[in-house]
Image (tube, rainbow, N blue to C red; front, side, top):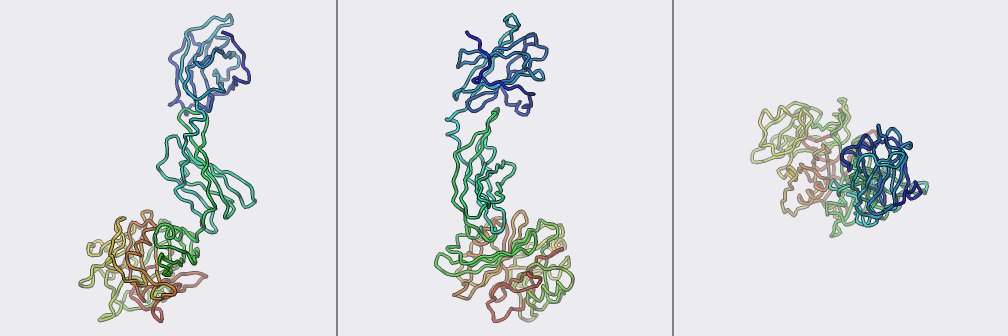
Length: 495
């Protein structure tokens, strides 16, 4: 059997063995002989393997390596070790499983101790051809924001991340890599309305090489004014044609969006949406009452917001709140009321099973049926307002009413991560917005992944007020001739 030196076919690379992080899945030989060889490791690669072993205190002058697919012998001189370790690659191997033998020899060619036998494998075209490209869970392309792709949590074995190729605003093709821990692939400098492609990266245990799937090619994706609009358009099942959409940032963590669309029957709908991330410390949900006081009376949403602003708190947005009496006490709400820790009303109108939405003093959001609350429960709320009997979502369960009447509507709901939504739907104008049934409302807010949601007072009461351009203004088209005076409001405020 001929012994050959190291050639281009047998590429030998020597370095300090810094691959200990993979040691748990490396293949090891057993024992040493006369201090000649220790810890023989074989790592897999694409048509190659990496072989390494320790030679501390070795009496050998060289080492002979053979494998089961060839009669050739690789000779490695002991003088080529670095930090008492030898590492080299065996290239041009077909995909498959191999047995490797390492022996130590003295200067006279005699063998020191026994042979070290280890098994290993290589990967090839067959392995690569079987790798699946993991499709993105979502493509998030929002106007004036850096786009990104999100990934499912259910991923194949050995999947480690994604590589995306796209065109930049300077018309250059670039690529980015993201990994499982990132959760998203962000595309900085992406050129609007250009196609891109991505492929999945795989790193098998004990592998020295990363493998790539075939790419998924994606046409230029649609843009949306806001994330809320995107989810409503894509997931509610209500939108057939978008006629207009917009977004305004009211705060770093509060967005105001509008969405006009046609349903499958061609009927127009107009939505006004506040999305507020209440997980941020400087935002709050607050109950507004007329004149920023506690007496039952009526006042418009805008006037209530102005009164709170005059008292020194910035109101970012507000919508109408609870249903209420006109007589015998005008402005007495049907449900409970708590304002900034003060329990104003803790009982329900006779015969009415109101729901409620509120924020507790510990900052947690709550929504449910007010009949379940005790007197002690009310003292735990910082702000609370009653709502309709028709809850839309309770603990992620959608309520179905099979109703057919469409009206202007106001609703609110929140997700598990404290994203709160205030939504107004205009109605009673056939050429502009026909309004919605309760079941249509729940389709809209359900598309936003809420766990809890309820219907507030509607009809002529439905009003949204937004603080933009340094002023409070009504943004929807209320169905009465003038803005209706109501009992209370729900506001997003700065603390």
